[in-house]
Length: 332
Image 1 (tube, rainbow, N blue to C red):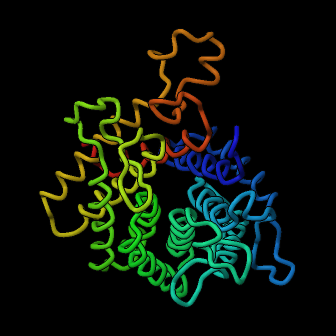
Image 2 (image 1 turned 180 degrees about the vertical axis):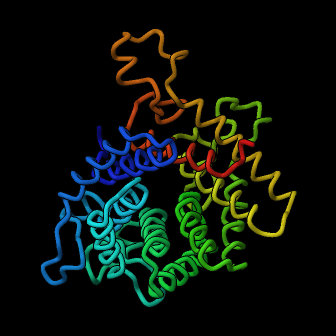
């Protein structure tokens, strides 16, 4: 399909690794491991630095920062990943380290003199968040002072950027990095940043009581030209669900705020309801040929209520969102 690239493949490997860890499923772990090894083959050791692994393809085809970050996260999530594989993830993080700038920003385009927000304006809402999340998880598994400082400086930078140019995907990609940072530092300011982003995100959610678009309930408004837009929501809801689940978890680790907990829990449950409405199940695929239905459709998340196409990144986001929900405790 148009738009397919290795970052989508890495996202799928990450989702499968997370699912394998959550369920203790050896087959899923094996498939995720094979995918990770295949994706590592489109990276190479930097000839100038044996501790650095660099994606081969140019960012015009597949963003190198986003790909390296998500692939590293997939390795970290893989149950039973050996030291050799972890070392490769650390080499990917070394590549990410070289993209960090003194102001905390992440240089996510290839040209050293580029202004990333001009070359790829939409990329600022995803790739820096992925990079900071990968470094935060790396810091949990292989602690280093520079990693903690890089994540703190980076999240501070993009928190300030968000205040001037908010976007739902920026909120969703920064939150996991902030949540990891909070677990490392127990900083009240970091927790406040999580709530700030996700309180704003909840404001974009279609309420269950909206009679105009009952199939959109629990999904999120689109964002264009600095304004919310009433448009059909889609599988990106998986990323927003994962963000809200992180916020719900952090709220339970600080002095109780019952009102915030109730608000986040309802938002999470509504997002789950919307997301499961995008999934092909036994009940809504009976009109398809049985083999095709069983081997291709069932379990997949389609793109939106208006688009029944399956794409691997949509299903991966759905899986990650649902796993975030289950791990958050909001279902109890």
